[in-house]
Length: 533
Image (cartoon, rainbow, N blue to C red):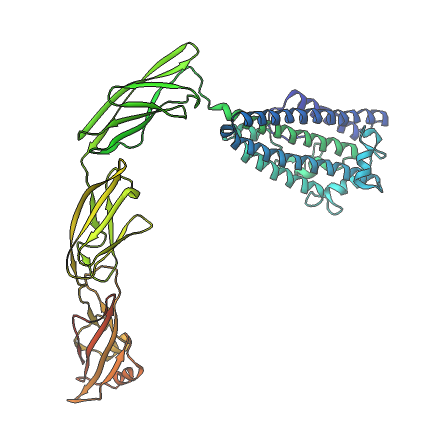
């Protein structure tokens, strides 16, 4: 048939050969007696499919037994197997429904699918019109051009492709390449054996077939689906124990809880026999520390970190086998360091009044959740953020101290502290565009449309804006009535005055007040004077 692209089993080769011989005889218009004899192929495939389903059922039962014996190990693959069972059952039922619908449609059965199902319950010999062809072709390829772009054959192909994609995803990765080769090939280049014309999968399998030929095709597809289900389930079952340790080689492993220990702290690690069963009882010795048993088939090693510097250790674990205990040596090293901390302001070296000052606190070898950070002086307060950093706030100038402690060994140990200077935020400069004073074109003033607050080199993340100011123009020594402004932008009346200015006229912006994170304040420059050029 060309429906698969893999080395076939003897049973599959026999079925394919019988089908080819069968369809060849149909082309030769053989006698009804010979035609009926090939119905045996369809009947025998039904029996074969039932046997395959029984084998697959046994695989599920083995899986269920394994789950009961070791749920932690088996459950993940068992859940996948249940998904395979669900998808495969749906696919097999769909193929069966097509088969019965085909028989009902081709033979004009008034009872529809149910009548067809009862009719062939014992044998396909009971199909009234075994050699009916036109209704069969229309059923699978549609009543139009019959090029495979419509009808149930296209729907069947789409269902098969979707099913096979799911099976491939559920199959263990190590088996996928082999599994791909046994899947039904639906996107190959098929040719009519007589004319040599290329055909798609739908036309190749269902064009000019009589009813019993289509039944054999459907049964063969059903067989291949069941085979895929059986293979995936057994691959999943085998994968559960594929990585089990075979007792022919073992190594001792030490898994330290921490390799950086504060002076006065304790080094702690798990000592395990790699790939050994979790229920195996272990025994161990270590001169440098104490080894105790756990309830998970491992040993826990503890060595006191009293002296600063590099520490080495070695010991032996004993694995129980049928022939007795077998020793496995282990060794390792760790460092004991004096308490150290790192405290640094995120943005600069001082803390500024009235704003959130980001602070980073780190103590090598200590979990950030075990740190206790406090602040003292300058009316300070400090809080921990969700990302593990801290935010400090101070209210008065002077100095403040940030102290850090850690929860270690069931108590709290001081790690150190650092002093910070507390300062007012530097006063920013008010500008019109990039200009503070001097000669300027009136178009520049009009285009700027107002003032901006320039923080200069101060890169702390705070914002300033103009709160209020006084605006006046001087023409030939005569000053207009001053205008009061608020906000960064010039008013429309101010813009109109600017448009009327001539060379030599002056613009004076005075009594400038700005607003920042600590409230209203004066800028570094409280007035701006410009001469129109």
